[in-house]
Image (cartoon, rainbow, N blue to C red; front, side, top):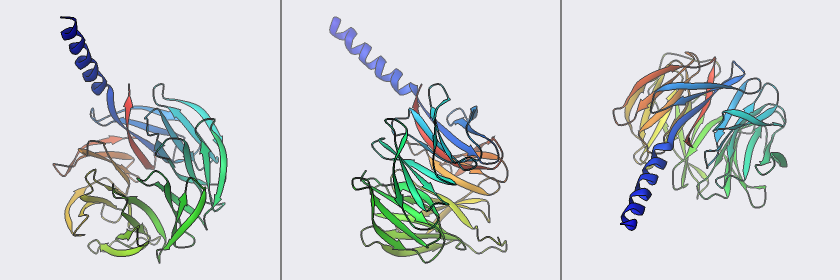
Length: 326
């Protein structure tokens, strides 16, 4: 009898732990001094969390316990405890910190320092900057790779992306991209990168083993013209690696691209000037930040449409979706 009760308790405990996992989207509001938190399943904003001035980049730690935010307006990084929704540390960094990312093991935060042409490495053990790695002019995006050891960084000013090895904390490789690199993402196996370029209404595909561009995917032409060359921006790869989701700032749509054939298989209407997109860990939903309409879309990926539009702060930009233990 005791064995049966123990087994029942174990099953109930497992079920309760699963119920405690809640996908949340953390979104920076660049025109404010706070980020917004959205419960993806409930389709509602939970709270706003005050950070520094002009919060821009954001990343949820692998264990879901903390969120890092780069504040471009005051050159700091805010560390937020996801249980209390409070800032627990504020870290001074270089001028104009842009995107940031946790390493896969959670030991480091990599922050691109756009005006000082480097990446700052923060130790999560004491929230101190422990390395500064020269990258090239105007680093913008940093992306942790599935191998857990390598990180790719875009250099806007030098029209290239560079590879850092976390063991040596040095640049070990670079790939010319023949244009102003904007945002990149990786396939789950790490074999390919997808990268948006300024002036290209589409995306380029990079083979990480050959370390070169192997293809490009062009979206349909549009009469709308942006003098700054901002055509496509945010992108994400589905959990199974089959599809790429690409936001167009010209058409206010999300283009769904077959990652193998490079063909556009669907389009999804978003808000005005969609900036960033991320996907829940179960692959069912995407969240999109819309910079010009000051809201976020929750997209049902199976249905291929937005199922909720949630108002947030001014000029929402980056976002990250994490599974948080409540």
